[in-house]
Amino acid sequence: MTIRHALLALLSEGPKYGLLLKDEFEARTGEVWPLNVGQVYATLQRLARDELVAESDAEAEVGQRLYELAPPGRAELERWLLEPPVAASPPRDELVIKILVAVTVPGFDVTAVIQNHRRQLMEVLQRFTRMKTPGADLAFLLVADAEIYRCEAAVRWLDTCEARLGAGSRIPRPRSGDAPGDAAASGPAGAAAGGQAGAVAGAGDALEAEGSSR
Image (tube, rainbow, N blue to C red):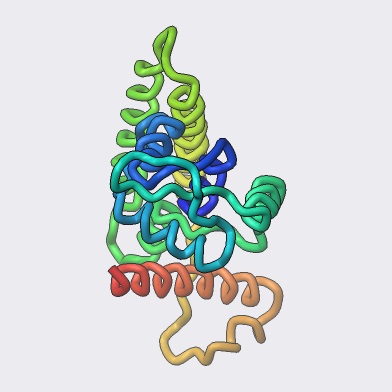
């Protein structure tokens, strides 16, 4: 969920001020994603600039500026809600990148990476399962379900990785001195190897770029 669209959704209920929007966002999302009130006001200013919200004439508490949803904001909210996210390529996932990189490191035990992350995922899964108590808030239950299913899927993927590694599958490395097109020139197997190596290189570049941007 983007903060921008979450605020539009909250304002669809009526005029509100920044601190109230912060509190309602946290309550509606199961109180698992804390939100800075400064971020709320900065987002409101950008929404007002884009004419998606406007200052309201409704009476507010002393010192509070009310905002209301403008017609273009309602249209943008509905567009975002109905439009599936673009899935042209797999999302950049740190765990996937770690495994792809780990299998290329000479002498490194990839199974240690798999076991450490599987243990952590199981702990998260069990924690959210225990927190799903009768009478729990609906928003939290939905978030907990999403986390449980995410962890289950990641654990299954790690199990598959371990099975493939146990079967001897490896991502081939380019030989020293090979030109970038040499793998593709050697036939279908070489082309596949080149594509896999390129994927790992791209993953490493992505991780490095992400680290340098922080």
